[in-house]
Length: 112
Ligand code: 5GP
Ligand code: ZN
Image 1: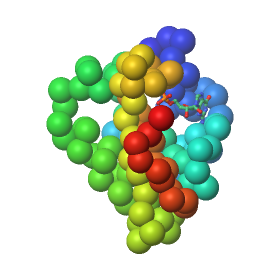
Image 2: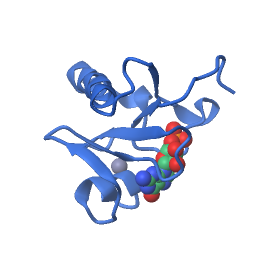
Image 3: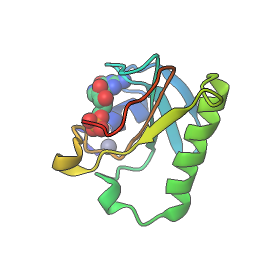
Image 4: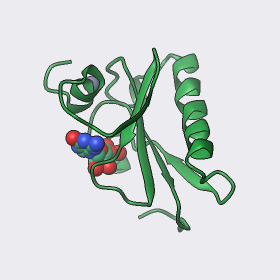
């Protein structure tokens, strides 16, 4: 989609610290990390938010990829958090579906 920053990262048109990609998803480092490990896992297809998702296999693949990346980056035993912010009250700022993988520090609850 034109003017979508994550579509441009997926296409390789703007640089990002990509750590993983396959035919369905791309994972890269958040530009403003909120934890020692802060990755974003995004589908290659443009979906504006979780509210638009009907593809359960794709959503499952995003979650399983997050778990695998957590293991590969050494945070799974200590623990981590996977977050999907949806729309304005959910705190979403980039309207291309993405899961945050946060790890490497203790996470408080509830989130702000
Ligand atoms: P949201 O608030 O929509 O859940 O999360 C969007 C995330 O994207 C934020 O954590 C923000 O730091 C990150 N972000 C925004 N623009 C860019 C960018 O150009 N490159 C990267 N790597 N991350 C970005
Ligand atoms: Zn997009």
